Structure formats: C-alpha cells, structure tokens
Length: 186
Image (cartoon, rainbow, N blue to C red; front, side, top):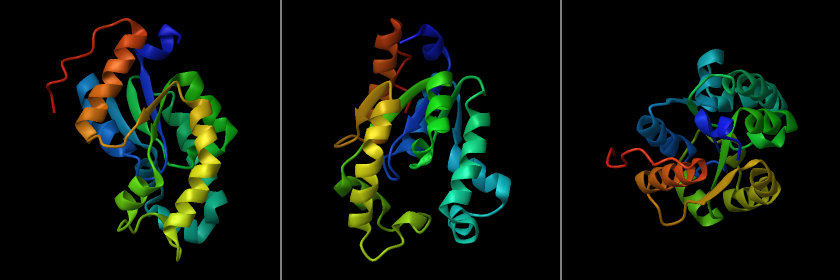
C-alpha cells in the first residue's frame, strides 16, 4: 500500500448498520483526524433528512448528490469519512475513494445488520415488508464492490466500537510500519 495513502485519509465503507459512523468517530478521535459522515453532510447541505430526498428525488437523485459530496470530501486532508452504504455503487465514488485514502470495509452479517437497523426510521431502503430479504439482496449486490474497493476488510461480528477502532488502528499501523497511537483513549 502506498505510504501516501497511509498518511492521511481513512474511508469507511459497508452496509447500513455496519458501524461506519460509530467506529469512524472513535477512530478519528484516536488518530486526531476530523470525522465526517457523508450522509450527515448531505442532510446538512440540503436541509432535509435522507428519506425526504429519496421521496422527492428517488434513489438516483440521492446517488447524484452523494457523488458530488464524496468527490469534494475525499480531497479534505486527514479525515475519517463514513460513507453511505450505497456509495460504492457508482464507479466514480470507488475511484475517488481509492485515489485519496485508505478504504476499510466494515463487514457484517445480515443478522447483525438487521438487529442494528431494525428500529431506525432513517433507512429508506429498508422501508419494506421484509427488511431481511432487502438486506440480503443489498449485501449480495454490494459485497463484491466493497471488497473490490477496500484496502482492508474488518469483520464487525462480536466486536464493540472501541475494539473495532483499536483493531483498525493496529492494522493500519502494521501496514505503514508505524506504531499505533495510544489505544487507551476510549
């Protein structure tokens, strides 16, 4: 992995409910990076929640907004960016993520994802009679894209946010040949 990628940005990809935002916040704090969530940035810029964007513009409209935001955010220095679950669907997003930082795929099982998202009303793609079937279909479609773009794959099963952040920090340090930061900060 090029040292240039290791020095700056970390981009988290994975399904909704994989822990990108929670892990990203902890990891950013430990690395003294800025944390940004692309979905939250889209909401801040539009002034509405993501489900509203989906209702008005459809998924295609949302994905266009997402591409614009990601293209800008990846150029910021020293950030941990949590991307939306479907960000990898556009080849332009995958290329931008690869070019500007280390991409980490937070992998989770459908059971874990379902448990973590079951009561979340801000998930327009799960507004269906069978959220499990929807998650299975989304994961089947997206998993190869996550793996393709990722520099590291981290299994989130049986781990809490802090242990995942520690694991990521250690693996990044090993790859770069540096010592990890003090991981006692929780």
